Length: 364
Image (cartoon, rainbow, N blue to C red):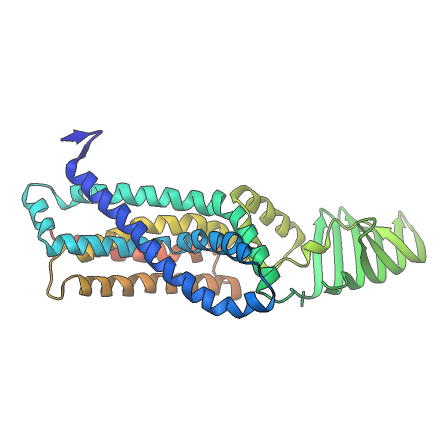
C-alpha cells in the first residue's frame, strides 16, 4: 500500500520514531524537573515564591525550553532505542531481505528528522522566546541574586558619530561615574560633555549630568560652558546596563537580528555570544539529521550485547557532540580566534564525517 509515496513500513518507522522521541522527552524531563525542584526548593521557600507561579510561570516554561535545548539528544536516544529493538527482533533483516535498500529504509528516518528539526527551529526562534521572558523574570525574582554591573571603562557608540564613556555604572542607584559624551562628524570632534557623574531621573526619564563641562568646536573657535546639572540624551536606558547575557533567549529571530546590530553599533564586547545564540538556532536543529544517520548506522546491526550496547555507544557519541559544541563555542567567546558561525558549525561538520563513515559500514 502506498500513500503520497509512503509505504506501510514508512508509517511504521515514523510512528516509532516520533513516539519514542516524545516518550524520551517526557521521561527525561520528568527526572530533570524533580532534580531542579530539589535544587531550588530552598530559594522558592526563602523568597516566598507562590505555588501558582512556580508551576505556571517557571516549570510550564522550563520544560519546553530544556526539551528543545536537548532535542538532538532526545532524537538520538529515540533512534538508538527503537532501531536497536527492531534489529534485535530481526525486523531490519526482514526489511532488507525483502528488497528494500538501506538507503530507502533511511527515507522515513529522514522524514521524521525533518519534522523534528523544523519543529525545533520554530520553537527556538519564535515560540519559546516569549516563554523564556516569563521564566527568566521568575528566576530573577525568586532564584538569582540582584544583577550588578561590574564592567569598567564602558565605551558605547550609541548613534553614528555619538560616543559615550563611563568609568563605571551602578545598577542599584543608576549612576554612571566619570561620564562623557562626544559628537564626531566626518572624523572631527564637534562637541564634548564631561561630568563627574550622570544619574537616571525616573520622573523625566532622562539622564542628568552633574558638575558638567561642555566644549563646542565651531570652525577655529571653541565655546566652553559649565554648570551644576543638565539634562542630556544619550540614547541609552538603565535596562541597557542591567541585562544579563541570557536576555537573548527572550528574543525571536527578528528581534535578535535587530539587537545584534544595535550591540555592534554600541561596540559591545559580547556580540560573539549573541551571534552564537543566533547561529545555534539553525545548527542545533540541523544536527538532528546527522545524529539520526549515526543512530541508525550504529543500531541497525544485531550484535551481542543487544540494545544496551547500542544505547551505551549512542549516549557516548551524543554527549561527546554536546561537549564538543560547548568547547568550540567557548573558544569563540573567550578567545575570539574562532568566528562564531565556524564555532557553531564545526561539530556538525566533524560529526557529519563520522555519520558518513558509519553509514558506509552499516548493514546493506
